[in-house]
Length: 286
Image (cartoon, rainbow, N blue to C red; front, side, top):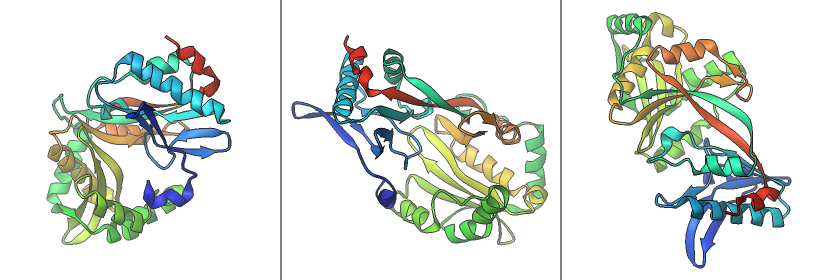
């Protein structure tokens, strides 16, 4: 979180029992509300793998009590999509029920489950054949500058009027700090950059963080073959995540985007955003 720490009022918390660290909450403060850190894609209480449900509930009660006593009215959590868990870990669902949490946003994520056979549909297969005939070559690359300046930023600006969440300087810094977790793949036709993808990698998930193609991407199918090769490359991961296909805080499904991701065999998963009133800490006495 350090590279953009100037944008947030940090309020990250450590929860102890005596001198033993039990949990961590990366968070920032806005007014009388706490957010599981808004500079992170996902958030929530980070706990040890072996935590028991009673202990988890006690930890969460201590967290809410501390916030309530310090004038914080609401805790907002961006729940971790369950594909990122290394084991079954649904304690937060139980705590949300007990504390009368409100789900105020629900984003649709499209995900390939690698326990099933990878099977793109007929449209994608036709595009892959086209790309092969156009001599599109995929490379693991460090050419963030050209992808950012020539393809990604212009496309986002022209189509949506927005900039990438990360600047070129930020993504290059993050890729340097986390070389095993952030990788760039570019697609070239006769050494001309046609498309690019930035992957964020965890133990369980290969996630398409950024993807974009040049204006002739339909003619060359460069983005199709780029996705196909990456999906095959990370077949050892439990999941390949295509990211969100919903807009306006989850209330509108981008049907075209959803279909394109589903055409590779992706299925819907959900990331919930929940709001908990800290005064409800007393509901966790079990």
